[in-house]
Amino acid sequence: MNSGEALAVGALAFAVLMAAECALAGVLTGQTPAQWLAGLRQLHALLGVAGQIGFALMPWWRVARGLAASRAKP
Image (tube, rainbow, N blue to C red):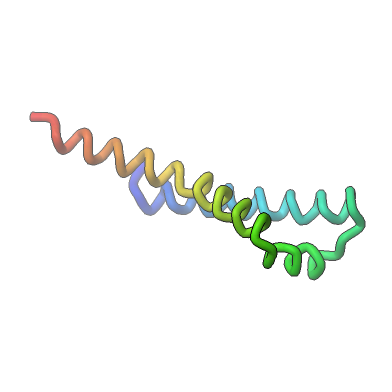
């Protein structure tokens, strides 16, 4: 897997995660998607989104780390 593929996998994972969160907000709290998006402006929600972005970047980070390690070997 190259870096571009890893970023695509992470972006897909992020999109699925955010869609699931939006759907759960609708089912569990009755929020509309617009209300859910508006709630993401709060600090605690922004911190959660930052964590989810970190989650989405993990495949890329792993590939990049593996590429750097393979280049360092003689």
